[in-house]
Image 1 (cartoon, rainbow, N blue to C red):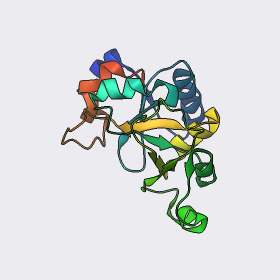
Image 2 (cartoon, rainbow, N blue to C red):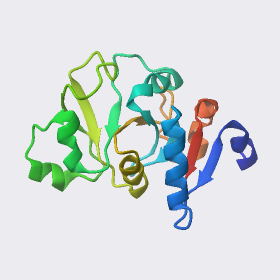
Image 3 (tube, rainbow, N blue to C red):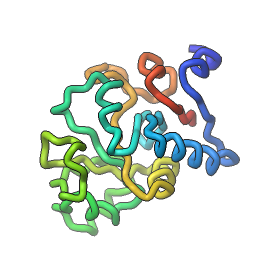
Length: 175
């Protein structure tokens, strides 16, 4: 899809070293207003929102409610705020940041309306300066999932891969 067509569906910001801080601030602003942001991670493109707005991710993905969303955190040290660490902290710090999701027991500090049908939560600290800076800027985790319709065979690695949900995304970070 041409860039002009993408721009008509959602606001797109290009991530460069020169625009990095501006992009983080713009994304934080959209998220704090309850918006959905598509962003590159260390594995593929994801969509994120604040955990209190996670219903938006279920709607845009057409995802069943019994299929949990994950959390992005800025630092492995934050895991203990939201989940019970069931592996050694040393191992967690060796694995994270990185392309690993830890499935852990949720703590009561995680709002009940976030993945209400499970006692577990998938926690990621991606090896992505952008995602980690955004979580640090917000001072809280982000609800996250891949930027595609649930069950889709497409693993979104480029902005063009999720044009079918673009109209439900408030900001796309291209980089």
